[in-house]
Image (tube, rainbow, N blue to C red; front, side):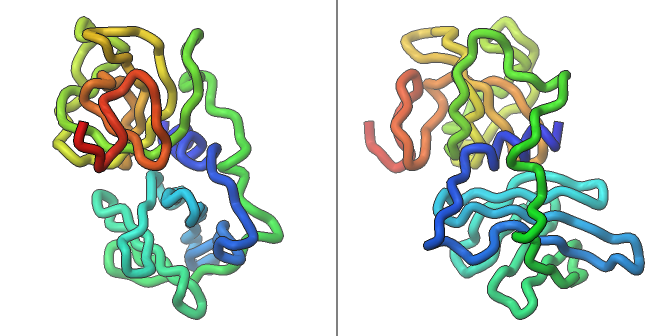
Length: 203
């Protein structure tokens, strides 16, 4: 599931020459068997990490670092060399552009394939509160109650309509994937039909 999350988060990223020189990094301490891969898409404001039994999203903190607060992961690309911080311990990173991670191009595992009839989106957004469910409808079991403002990746549109809004498949930063009603979602940088609004808009 975490691999699916990273694939979904990074599949839409468009790496331009105006972005950082390298968006893929290998970090850790090979002598101790510690390895983690970092992939970032600066222009899209989304990244991911995978390795050492962890995986999830990274988002910019506004001060030059990329973070996942739930997992205690921080990536600092501006350090020389770049550095990843795991639970307070620092590990150096190297440019992996010559042999980039295959996370952005790999196919999702069979158990996480996009359900039939859904349209891929893969865009960042926020929950406006409400329930994360196992399927596109209130009849499906609840996975979690999401707080207003929680960042997520909008993976796909199920095209199941409820009260004028559609249900969307979303991924959380801790690896959980489920469905949230579009009336309780906003999108960032991309206007999407079927959900409440773009984040920051007032209507």
